[in-house]
Amino acid sequence: MSVMPFKRPNHGPARLGVLLLNLGGPEKLADVKPFLYNLFSDPAIIQLPYKFLQKPVGWLIATTRHKKSTRLYEAIGGGSPQRRITTEQAAALEGELDGMGVRAKVYVGMVCWHPLIESTFQQILQDKITHLIVLPLFPHFSVTTTGAAAKKLISLLNEHGGVREMKRTYITHYEEEPSYIDSLVEMIAAEIVKFPDARPEAVQLLFSAHSIPTKYIKRGDPYLKHHQKTVAAVMAGLKRKLGAESPHFLSFQSKVGPVEWLGPSTEDTIQRFAKEGKKQVLAVPISFVSEHIETLYELDIQYQDLAREVGLPYFRRVPALNCHRSFIHGLATLVKEKVSAKAGKARFGTAG
Image 1: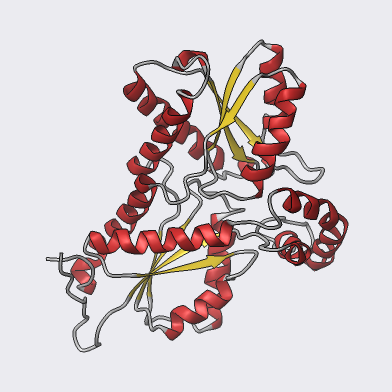
Image 2: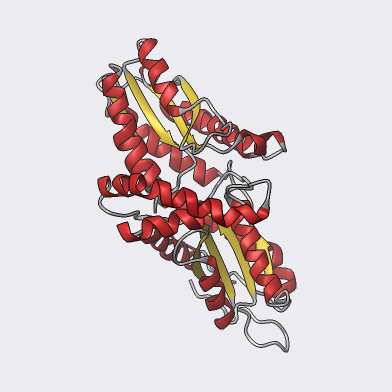
């Protein structure tokens, strides 16, 4: 399929960019402490009542936690694979878009580690992108994830006078995007058949998402509602695919600090399942679209050990989506929809 370069009259060729946003993770053990500082000093992620305390508290948490966190990263091979996987997702998305007739350059920008949004933004400016579609790798909106990344990007834009010559389009959430749901359904179904009793009704599904402080939910953050919508859509898809329903439950992991966090916790839920006599549990990392510390350590090591300790004999988990074909197609569909919406004005995008 041939693609015509999109042009704006009297302004030369237009250039379409897609910015994939993710949190980021330390790639080697020496990165752990500065990564933790970046994480806990970001007011959009960990909000303190007084702004002047943000950096000192971030430094204190990073200093007190980095030895423990370093041991966790040692257990998964010495660092997070998130940068590598996100880069692979960007390449796959660029290829998928090209197959759809959309010529775009896909960038990766991280909130807390390299490539930081700041450096990626400079590359976007250097490449003279005329229309930027911002696509977070967080299907479910929260001010602590998508909001934090968008806030950083908007701050950069303001520092450069608004960059009015570059049009921007934001994709803020896609918890029910059909291909995203299909990818989850396919991967869950592929794991169910690996249990000794492969009947769907004999496998307890445990959707596990990253927790956030409950204060954000009380202020109207849609994070919980978005996850509930995803779970409902996935369960409907599984019933169509398998002809039967699995029992299912939504829990939350990865809380840090003494504040109240969204629950119930995945740890408590696994213990409850054991007390109830459950034998087969399949964990689904619903809010994680790439492998990182929370899947490779918490789910694969910490919760696997817990399951053995409490007498839950069969505990498996669904792999993160990474570059799953349907997931990448879903991302490309989201981008193409935004391209099509702008095509009449900007004359860019799709093949004729």
